[in-house]
Each structure stands twice: as structure tokens, then as C-alpha cells.
Image 1 (cartoon, rainbow, N blue to C red):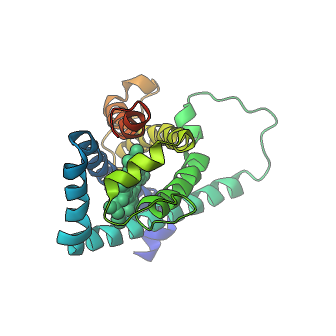
Image 2: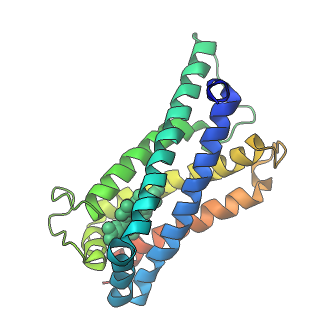
Length: 218
Ligand code: HEM
């Protein structure tokens, strides 16, 4: 087991499998959040289900997510260090050949997404007042509306969703290759399944801040 973790392929498999768990979560979370368009009662009832009625399930999911994020970030960090160590001196000239913008933003985009997740949980679950002074426990709908009535938060979330799009697109494609389920495709737009997953998740999430900003949700 330790030998597996020590190998670069082992770390990639860990990064890929934990990534798949996180993809599963974002799809479910996105679908749950779209219920905001069904009104306050429905959305708050859904939040209550997760926060009270099914709290044991919620805690089990939290533990799995936490472990996944830690292993995902740790394997990414260790692989990055290995890749830096393998080329300690930068190229004089660096011109992308077959890499996509998405693949080149995985590391810093990933760091940004991590910061986003910490702030997001602080804002909507932990109720950090400096992020949302009017936060009220048990009022998920009101919290989301109050946050997205501020253009700054709408912009921050939309930027985060842009990075999520890139990260999901490259990540879901890379894991298919790591697990041997897809061949290398030089043409990025041939990566249809990753593209569809990335677009559906990102657009689905983005509709929430946009819905509030446009006055459809209030
Ligand atoms: C516009 C997009 C999003 C909206 C409106 C939204 C909304 C929310 C709300 C309202 C909560 C708090 C639920 C509660 O405590 O009652 C929450 C929790 C959470 N969200 Fe999001 N979310 C969004 C995007 C994301 C994204 C992109 C991720 C991850 C990449 C994410 C990860 C989480 C996590 C991990 C929690 C904590 C769940 C828990 O353990 O209680 N969210 N979200």
C-alpha cells in the first residue's frame, strides 16, 4: 500500500478517485441548489433535511469529503513537487504544444477553488459574520439571497465557477485516462463527456447567483 502511494501513478490514481468523489458531490449539491427556484419553503426544507433530519448522513458525507479533499490536495502537491524537482531549471522558451488552458490552470485554479470552498463554508454553513453579517441559522434561502444581492459576491462566485469549469473539464478527462478508460485525445473538444459534466455543473451553480442578481429569486 505504501509502495503504491509512493509511486507517481499511485498518487495520480488517488487524486483521480478522490476527484471522482468530489465530482459526485458537486453534481448533487448543484442539483439541490437549483431548488432555490422552487421557492423559500422548498429550499429551506431541503437544507433542514440535510442539517437536522439526516444529520448522521450529512456527517458521514462531510468526513468522506474532508478526507477526499485532503488526499486530493496532498497528491496534487506531491506530484507538483516531483515535477518541479524533475526540471529545476525553467525552459528559456515555453510554448504550449498540446496542453489546454484548463490543464495549465489546474494547480493555481485548484488552490483558488480551495480558498473558495473555505470562504463558502464560512459564509453559508459556519455563519462567519465578516462574510455575511445578516447570516441566520436555519434560513439557507435568506442567506443565499442576502449574499447575492451584493455584486461583489456574485462576481466572486462566477469567477470561482469559471475555475470550477476548467478544473472539472481537465480533471474528469484526466481521470478517465489515469484509469485507462479513455485514450489520449489531442483535440480538446473531442472530450465530450468531461465537457458536458463541466458545463452542466458550472451553469447549474451559476444560475443561483445570477437568479438573485436578476431579481428572479428574492
Ligand atoms: C452558486 C453556487 C453555490 C450555492 C448557492 C451554494 C449554497 C450552499 C449553501 C446554502 C450551503 C449551506 C447549507 C446549510 O448549511 O444549510 C452550502 C454548503 C456547502 N457547499 Fe455550497 N453552494 C454553491 C457552490 C458550491 C461549490 C462549487 C462547492 C464545492 C466545490 C460547494 C461546496 C459546499 C460544501 C462543502 C458545503 C458544506 C456542506 C456541509 O457540510 O454542511 N458549494 N452551499
